[in-house]
Image (tube, rainbow, N blue to C red; front, side, top):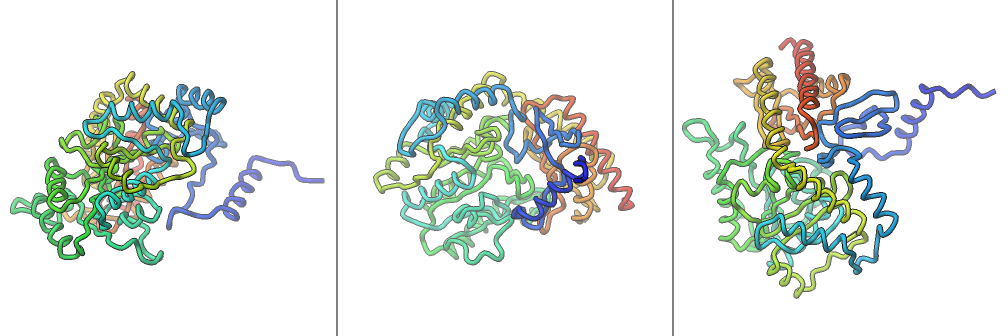
Amino acid sequence: MAAPTTEASTTARFWADADRHLVRYAGAGDFTREIIDHAAGSYLYTESGRRILDFTSGQMSAILGHSHPEIVETVRRQVGSLDHLFSGMLSRPVVDLARRLAETLPAPLEKALLLTTGAESNEAAIRMAKLVTGKHEIVSFARSWHGMTQAAASATYSAGRKGYGPAAPGNFAIPAPNAYRPDFAGSDGELDWRRQLDFSFEMIDAQSVGSLAACLVEPILSSGGVIEPPPGYFAALREKCRERGMLLILDEAQTGLCRTGNWYAFERDGVVPDILTLSKTLGAGLPLAAVITSAEIEEEAHERGYLFFTTHVADPLVAAVGNTVLDVLTRDRLDERATELGAFLRRGLDSIAERHTVVGDIRGRGLLAGLELVVDRSTKQSSDELGAMVTRRCLELGLHMNIVQLPGMGGVFRIAPPLTATEEELSEGLAVLDEAIGDACARFGL
């Protein structure tokens, strides 16, 4: 007679199947040992009945929270009528979304290509820049993350470069302007970003074979440790590009669509990119991305035979979701809400920093915040073990956090709750983070 099935036995079977059959794709990381059953709003719910507050919006994507009722209704309605087409065919949701995105952007950005992921949108943008300029060299930040496909991965420097053979030729990295850990400092000890930028392009010019096509950068480097270049930096960077005939591509996968308090993070700097890429936030958790550029660049690309014909280009189902995302962002003024909640979050993080000396720096904008842990504020010495312990303790207490741990930096928590979160939910998360840091410090004797 077979033994009765118990919750413990089905859970054990789940993890046995996962361990046996799934490819591990997170580098040295492993899967979170929780079986997620469903999600709603700012919370995840496990099969065992635990409720976990989601401070990462899924993969930094679910800006409207999980299972937003209007997104659910859009998917139900659209999948029942038109979900996918031959890639050369068009539907109303696609054209509507392209037009509406253009209406949220400054001139001359008005032409959109709708795709699936951030990597794919950056791949398409790089391909366009190379074709239009007739050149092939790409410059990116040394802490960048632009995706795992070939051209995007070749422009990614924060992880994943070793062991895969040669990257695409002509890719160069420049230092990210990190005010907390400046590599170029003035007499006051503050970051001298102008000198850093000048030096960076002196090095680029020395290495270039005269074929500089584009500079692909994030307005705030999220996977690079929530590094925000100072005001004025992007205007100066754009000038460096103009001097060399390069296009400026801004990757707003995580910063676009109201998260930073503006519809687009580049608005703070008064700089309009030649090409803009969107992803994550555009689909609010569903696979939707966009490349947006000027009519002039699109015309030049078309005349030269621009080809980016993929299986899911211009799919109507996710385009309909994108339109609903824009509806909610506009109606609920979530740009203003991100500013207000971001200020509330920052006050809470500042309060935590006052109580725990292991908090070395707090940075970011709106509802994209970074908190860097160090074991010594004066030396800024980092500890991977401390960050990992705080992360584990947060999960035990019911808070999902993501920590970035890169060489030369302390553990940096990327905090990106949904724009629909409440002050009560933020307070709950802050209280858990405070307790987790306290518990870890006690373990470390700090």
